Length: 118
Image 1 (cartoon, rainbow, N blue to C red):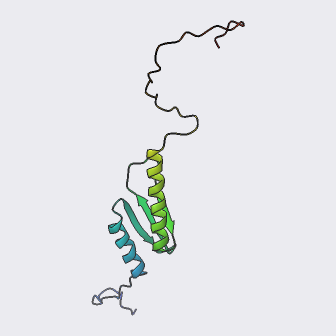
Image 2 (spheres, rainbow, N blue to C red):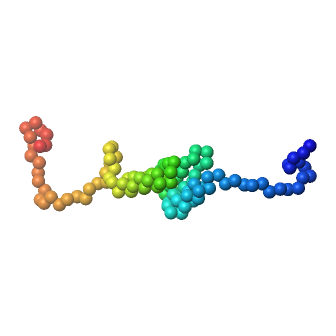
Image 3 (tube, helix red, strand yellow):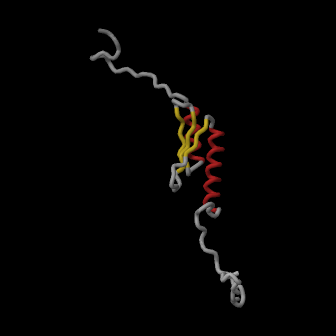
């Protein structure tokens, strides 16, 4: 039996190939530039991914085929987060009670002929 992996053969170094080195380096750079995000590159999908590390009820993740596109998606997600925290709630959610206004002297309501207040 022959071959370099055969028992008793001396250990030999094998060339280690780094797949998509520039793209992986770009993902590392984006992780450093955007500290609130974890950025990585998928070798199998050939795509960039980012996951937000801020406190949120749901996972915030974005993806794009290019690093520039990923940065745009990250900016959009941050703007959405900013708008959600600054705008009042919509729909069926209750708003916090408003401060009472001084309306001057109290007025009595006049009753209408049907017995209901006008």
